[in-house]
Length: 275
Length: 284
Image (cartoon, rainbow over all chains, first blue to last red; front, side):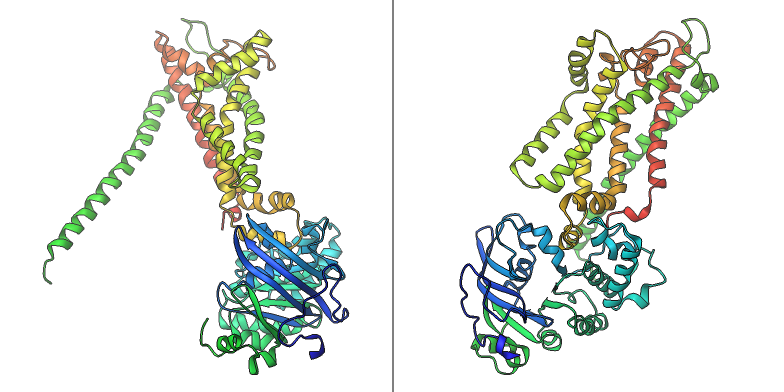
């Protein structure tokens, strides 16, 4: 397992080819990614790999760039006015920042769940989960039914809502809404699921449910999660990256990073000396 | 407790602020109710079945109605919506969803506000030059065109404002599902703002329903039925104006009745739409 994980800093990779890392075990490889908000250089030369069917956590203090990084992974960063990205991210042998790549297509393969649950306000629970398919032209009812049930089951929400699929999604509790958003992201069958602090607006019980869910999800999906909560990272992830001031300070297995960090800044952060 | 002179003064200032703002709010509401009541009291007497079904009678002959003016106003508003709503609505969508804080959006907003400030009589002359002169006839078409132009700026700004109320997180959610922007706007953002959007459009329509000046040069007036779209037509506001300045007691009563009908029309359209619309589309 540790063979695919660089111990301190990922190696610098060749420019114009897919990273030579063991392709069968890597879902996503970020190569010297830089990002800006207008003139503000918020990510500097980030290189990191996301192993297949594992949960990879990104931790770091507020403003370190972890949310920006995860938003770069499915080209959501550039949605903000004035935002800019340079670098390469390889998924399935394709650079998602390559020329002629449509960000809309990228986002269909790489789903995202946000900090605050954001179900579509006018849609029922069913329509929320089916939205990704419906809005992309799927009309076949049995296909939609199947996708909705599968999404809700994978998000561990099916049992709670199966008798009220026609009710508005906004009528659910915060934790249920967040799982609805996870179901919505899963219904389009993405390859990778990204979660940007998915539990920060939830109570401890709802948080525990989502964390439990992540363990289930990694059997089928590659998961990337940003969290400001180190305990959460330790609980849910197999790999962890630590960011500080826009740089990836350290990346490794979660076990090693939390027990035996190699960079003094990582150690200072995980032992609570700042952040 | 010890009396603190500073606190006493602050309490007085607070009471004064509450009283003065409350009074102004009360005056606002009173003006509306006084207006409604006064028009109702004066207009209700002349309101009868004939008012809605008959044409105006010649001077000196009692009775008659304003059927042609009621239908005329309906036709004018229909034409105005046909022009004003799509242009205003899509213009507003552009500003809220695409133009945002860009330079083009800034100038569009500026131009919209200037257009909104153009006196309505000037809009009337504009329509006169553009439609009446080339066609050599006053017409419903020209009147509807003038009212349609008047609808655009308010439709643009209300559409923009109501779309902006939809949180960015909703658009983000759709973006992250790999949905194209236009589909997100059409199937997610607009439905979420629908209630507000429709209210804005209806208020806009209500505003131009009472416009008189732009019709004087365009739709003119008509004592009989106006056929099709190319003839001059009667309309409620112009009839109110004509009848109110005439020296006949009977016409004055009918002018009050017309004013009442016009106001009820506006109230019913507005209130009705608000009640019928589903609550769920309220902005979260």
